[in-house]
Length: 272
Image 1 (tube, rainbow, N blue to C red):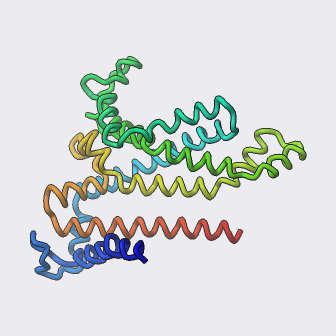
Image 2 (cartoon, helix red, strand yellow):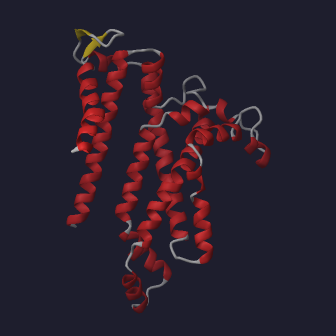
Image 3 (tube, rainbow, N blue to C red):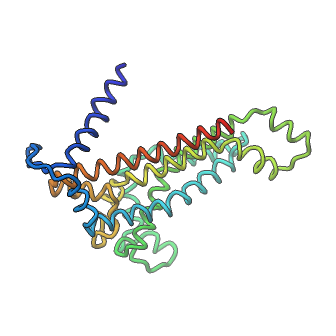
């Protein structure tokens, strides 16, 4: 009951209030002054900067989710067997958990500094990383992968090591080789956890704002603004009450749809 009360007070109530407010115009004191129906939504989707932020968020998800999934799955697969050296390598994989997001973002900002880039020096490149939209998106994706890598790796590694030993032993008796055991036995058994990490990655990229704020501040020329960073600009800098409630409502609804899809996938797997 205490948990239900906390969720109701700090999650459901603010969402319901924001959703209702999205159909009205409010003054700076939060007082409703006029009912406008869907006009706030129409104004938002006719705003070029918001549309650009949606495109940027979609682009980040298209790049980040597959890259993050492949890298974390490869890392967990590599050390899924308990050996002395694998335990050492696994310890190196979780080092990012020891650093705060803000610190890592500032470090990566220096690594991809457009004037004096560390990565340009090391690899003899000539890329103005954070001053070009394409390279800035790549830099943000690299940071996001680094931030999410450790947790997703731990989840996938735990799934691999939860596989019952008698299943592996039965496959050995049947003559299955390493590749057959991995692709036909182990990988199918961790699909639920793999699906969960994919949806976690989608959630993270949908709500991304702080890494962009610290690395690019939405630049160059607002080309790397995500939806949540656009929300930050409108709500906290511009004090735009209409955009604040409308964007938050859209984000919560879309996140809920993702959760419903995930639940349906898991339910289908249980009944398969």
